[in-house]
Length: 288
Image (cartoon, rainbow, N blue to C red):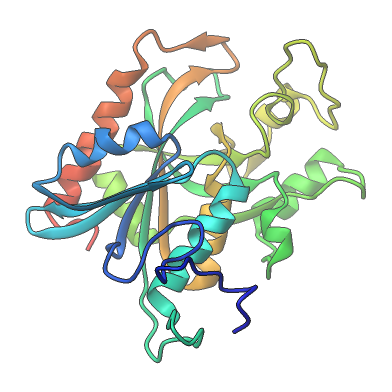
């Protein structure tokens, strides 16, 4: 493989992650904010490796004898493209030769994020696991995208013009979703956008150009399922994980309700509850 494709640092680590084999566990919890990494790793019994480069902070350790890694990705699916491709390379490419390893190593990704609900009946501080992630960004349009029935229905429902990047969709890993159901998390459908303001129909001083209204998106249904919340990463996580042969689940603490115009008065409570529940399940081997 050409040096311009698989880029390594002078110490042999991956260019953006700064990681080498052995630095990361195959069970990876992702967060957006680098400061949230320590909120997760404080529950580890032992932290064996730490590293930070740019907005990517990595802590690897153990909990109840099980190895795991928590890593910040930063915001947006452009970062997801870098982080997930390099993590896959870390486990499935011989970095010294650039050749694929003879045996594929499947990874497990659990996103621990925050999100805003768009349905009025979703209370603040609810924890939602995304059964499906719909991408309004364009990341998976650069790969072998699938024609998910929900994405097809949504494109027809919104009557999107040819110039618009039509939405794509991927599902969560069913085994991981089943664990989240046992934890009492609500199931939902997350919509991933390429930004926080205009793409999510927020307006400060700029009025976004809208091809559909917020209420229009709110009313969409596919086989009885509604879009429940927004974020900026999950569809990229689900899409790349699926295409690369990995498992993924996105769990979100709901800090805002866009339909009601409300925001949590103490957002850390929901985030800490989400982290504690997921790590308890990890310690019990539920995500093995």
